[in-house]
Length: 320
Image (cartoon, rainbow, N blue to C red; front, top):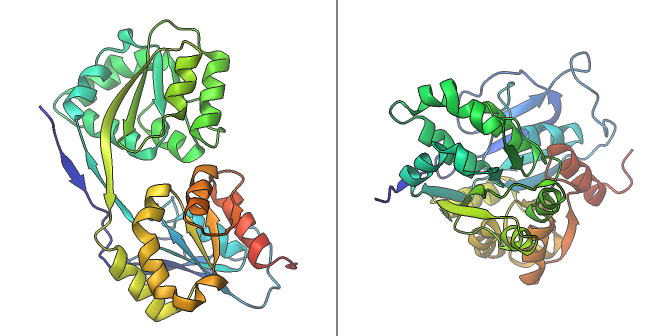
């Protein structure tokens, strides 16, 4: 029986999360979906790398906000440290699929050599399985320990932190994409049992293919599908009306590009040539190039610091 659950981000269609670069931050939870994160004073945080730069440039990040312990998205804060005012607009939503099947597989760690996570959404699917019935108690009592006796491979620190939250130890998080993680797995994996790979409908085939070529068994289970966020057009229109054309736009996935590009082109008009297009990784960069868009830079790794550093280099090449 297929379980289909639709999850929409909590932000209303026109909600945006914006940093006010160069000002002091009250590290607390925002009171509304549209809020401005301010930077800590010099006594409580490192100085902005570009503190003497005069102009505050506005940059747009097409991703959903993820608050840290200070109640602010780490990408917004990091860009603010470089004198860049960042706004987040979510462009994707997700529907979860086949969770009963995933739950059954999680109940039998003895049948697998380990786990692979290449997206935060796959981890969320596991979390949802653990919330059902008595699964949470069984997980704490025995299943978690049994899975921790195996390898749990992840792409990126953001995904790793979510996996850690459900009590699993991770490896491979320094790998910035699925291809690099596949290389890492191939250099280490020797189990005859398959690796369990919860994934989405848009997963790339490069990781499964690389593991297959090396004779490493893999069992993929599709647990979510990606759909456009219903508020894309409204949020982008609101941003352009209030903020104007951004100095740069960062895309975080090929699907995010697919669902937002048309609106961006229409809103930007003849000014689209002045926008610096940025990719969070090589896969997204290839998707941008395939659309005929110039890729001004690609983050060296999918982290707030790497992205902020790359954008600053493009927008402020002579910055202090």
